Image 1 (spheres, rainbow, N blue to C red):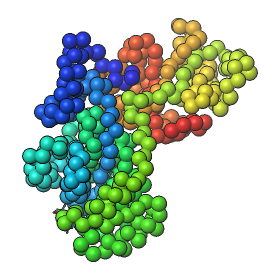
Image 2 (image 1 turned 30 degrees about the vertical axis):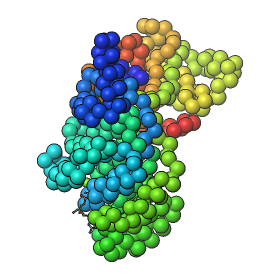
Image 3 (image 1 turned 135 degrees about the vertical axis):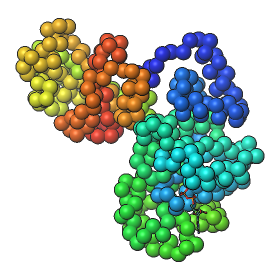
Image 4 (image 1 turned 90 degrees about the horizontal axis):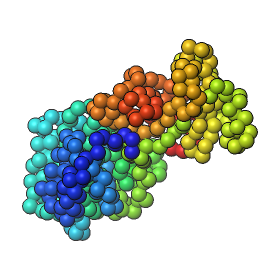
Length: 398
Ligand SMILES: Nc1nc2c(ncn2[C@@H]2O[C@H](COP(=O)(O)OP(=O)(O)O)[C@@H](O)[C@H]2O)c(=O)[nH]1
Ligand SMILES: [Mg+2]
């Protein structure tokens, strides 16, 4: 919540947003398109809109893979197949490399025209703007908008390149990684991370030969992940791909940054030993680790608290921040640490909103990235933001 805390919109704006959201839920395409633009521009009403539009349980499918393998053509075929079953489909095409006039998007535009008359299909292209972190956020938020709008399926195409895929992996129910035999004999080239996120492989361009060999390689590489041969230009294999997709268990969506978790509470104490008397001996919280953090000149005891933690902080030297804190404000809560799913996105958002960061992000002892936000920005407490996906020792979940 804290990350979303922009200026709260005035009440009269709230009711406008509610009406806007209602029109979107009722299937008004212009209102939906306007909302997507609002979100893309990080407009003042985007947060409130997203809050109004709760998930309707759309099947959200990420389609990713190297450029040119036929992702867009495949998405188009999947869309047709779903429409044939009467499903409403939203398509989101994300291309971090191409400017709005780029060839790939132009191709997508042409394909879009085919669905132009169909009110059961909504399409949106997003090209690069701002940072990749920003694009990842926009992708996620527009996908949430489409889910909230009530589509049966939301198909998101991204080029297999980093941040936007991370965003997809965190919000999609299933991920199709599209590959093609033409990529070369070894799949090592595309391995970097994208094979791992696949729930199903589409081995496209099967008409050009070599599909069987690639499918065999994939079976060896990822025995658990089904691989389906497709020819997106003719639609061959699409029924098979779709039924495989629908048979998959939906993955658990990773908590979005909005679902930030408290990682730990830092408490400044005059003496860690004395404090442990209470926290561990009397209260019974297990002590996970004790250490001295040289960088901050502080002695730390980390206590387990069922998924989050309590961090006791004692000055290791009279000039340290903790010593000064205690001298000025007395012992007590020193900081609150939030773990966010998309650290860069959260950082972008804070910077864009003028939050006062204490420094550039730093690397902690455990390899995780963190940054402190000044109490002047947070309403009075020092905030530590921690990158979520790097586990710290003793961390119990996610
Ligand atoms: N021969 C053949 N060509 C395909 C197939 N699927 C897509 N293509 C062509 O490959 C090119 C790139 O397709 P596109 O869908 O834009 O790829 P993307 O960059 O992954 O989105 C286009 O000219 C398609 O017509 C296929 O299964 N077989
Ligand atoms: Mg494409």
